[in-house]
Image (cartoon, rainbow, N blue to C red; front, side, top):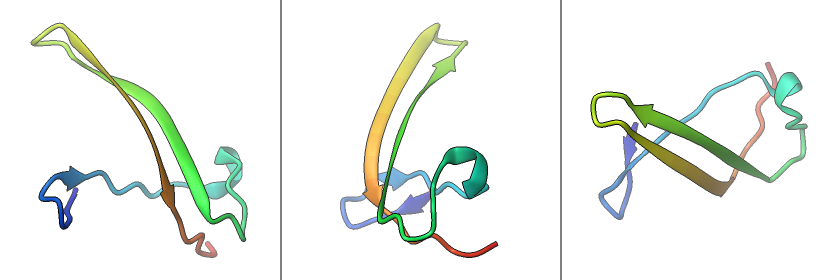
Length: 57
């Protein structure tokens, strides 16, 4: 997690590009998903797009 200007914690992701479909030269990636807090029986859905820099492996 990383703090940014707005004070919120942002999630930083690192993953293999080939299975994700992200290609060299892409400038934006969108992520969609959910996570469940079992203790609170609550599911949170997320969606966001962000400018990216694809680095060689």
